[in-house]
Length: 271
Image (cartoon, rainbow, N blue to C red; front, side, top):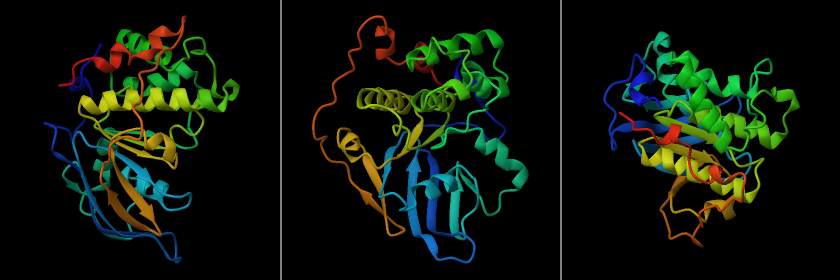
C-alpha cells in the first residue's frame, strides 16, 4: 500500500485539516453572451470538509463543479484553490493543481480502449507509483465496488452502473486532496449508493475534502453533512441537521462480504 506522500505534486506541500482548499468570492459565470448561470457565488471549503451540492436539474451544480476542477475560469469574481489565485496563476501550473483533484464525471469519461483495470490504474501510473502497488491497490478497489469479475472488460461492454463504479474507483484511487463527484449515485441502486457514500466518508475522515453534487434528496437526508444549495443561480449554505434515519452499515451476503468495508488501499495512512 502506498502513502499520500508518493503522490505529491509540484504545488503540493503540507496539507492539514482546516487548511483552505477552495474559496469563491462573488463569482459569476455565463456561457457566451447569455445570462449568468451562477451569480455572486461565495463560499469556502477547508481540508476535511464534506459538502453535498444540491439543487434542481439545471440549477448550476455541474457548472460549479466544473469551475472547481478548473475546466474553465469564471466570468467574474475570485477563485482560490489550494492557496493559489486562479486569476494570476500561470496556465503552466494548472496541471499540477488538477492532479490534486479527483473527479467523478456524470458522463463517466472512461477511455474506451482501456480495460476497467487500466482505467482505474491510470492515475497511479501517471503519478509514478510502482507497478506492483498499482496492481494490488487497483484490484482491491475494483473488488470493493463489486467489479472483481470485470477487471478486463472495456467500457463498451459495461452497463451504466458498472461504468459509474469504474469512474468512482478511478477518482478515489489516488486519494486526492479534493474529490468532486457529479451525480455519482445516478446509476446505482440505494444499497450501492449508501455504500459509495460510506467510502467517500472514509476518504473524508482521512483528510480528503469531498463535494457531492446530487438531486437525490432521500439519500442526502440520511447523512449528517452540510449542504451548498443552488437555486436560481445563487448559492445558499444549509446547515447540517440530524439525519432523518440512521444509515445502517451495509450487510452484503457471501461471496461479496469483502465489499462491505472500504478496501485496505484506501485505509492506508495518509502523510
